[in-house]
Image (tube, rainbow, N blue to C red; front, side):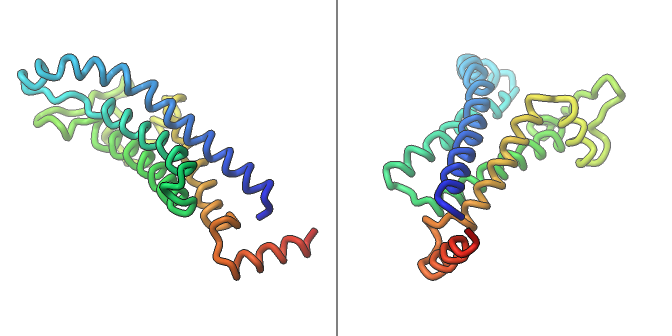
Length: 181
């Protein structure tokens, strides 16, 4: 992969990860502040707060720390690509898990997920449930699409970025791309 393509993919991956972090902060920070103020009263009644706002803020902080740690030489590109890919995939998996388990119904004994106006979509297959959420929640579907794109680009960079390839492989890739030109 040539340097220009590598830079373009790195920038695109960074923008997608930043957009993901910005969304998670936008959604999680106001709610976590409200929950933090009311947490004593919620636990006093036996109701656990929705854990997502706190997790969203922590997730965004980890995502935003990545570029800082890379530029300071604390973590290398290979590890950053691996961590970024894992975080994007984990976010998608957590979203699927949250919806497949009834929007937090597993947190409270005896609580079941609210049903939708169409008779409840939480009884079908997980795939249909996720497709339903993907079609009816445009913001969620946009963020999950950005996360999937970021993961795909990070995997591509992990596989093709000349900066992290071993010397022999980098030389062979660079010589084959220069002979194609």
